[in-house]
Image (cartoon, rainbow over all chains, first blue to last red; front, side, top):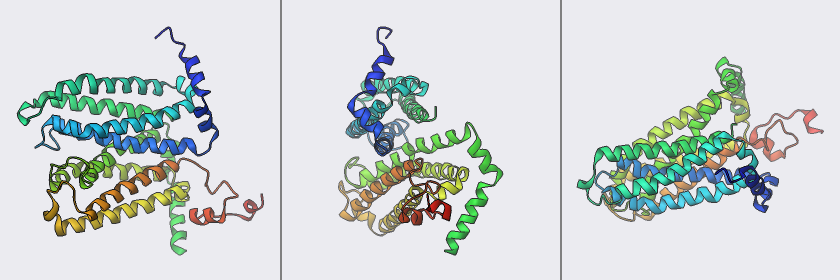
Length: 163
Length: 194
């Protein structure tokens, strides 16, 4: 980490053509931001579909692995939309982000959430192909942790605009 | 016109109340309420999307529609209630400018349309859901209703986000006649001749 000059990197990010076009346009930032929010609602749905299942609140008759597999393309599409809109937003104000604590909180929470999904949740629960395979306690912990992580990402994201 | 006049009198009165002034001037309350409003998107529209995607036949097709709605819609209703409470508080904090926002007015129209769409859907459900409850791909009318719901709510998100921008605010004259009409701006003669 210490070998990277983040400020220089962020300054360079801001000089990219895409960043400049968005910065110079009155409409682009708000429009991309709106689509980012549509992505937030969609991501929320794809995450809650699985997490509320883990809490035993919805899709109770469906094995966990089936719900996870069904929601996966939706989750990927939502995450893709978030990156596709989030990266241009970042490029347009990278230096502001560098000095913004909420931005770093969001990035750390985002990295944690994505790692949690692929390194913890999926390997642990992706094999629950039958209802009998479910262990409610483990499911509850993982579902709650997942919701907490994504909520942190979203809250820190909103807070970037306040500071 | 009298309706618009009394509505204006109401929002102007609202802006002068102690609670409204305290809220708009608060350092933490306003951002907290706004953040709650935005984060609740995930609960309200996220769970509504689960239902609409099932109605579209896109996913969870093996679960009967009635089971999805019975389990998932309570979360949607909870999210909606939170949205309304925080949304009313946000309006209460900034009543006049919000009332005069073309984006807010468009948002309200889209929400009313989404409400009518939902009401028509529920009327239909009462009539014939037993027929298609287990279908992997519900009838065209049901799918149209679900698609309309997703489209209208996406529009609500966009117009809601745009309220924050002041391009068409009444205090930024000159605006086009259309904007002044749509926003209900009261334009003084001095503002008309820049």
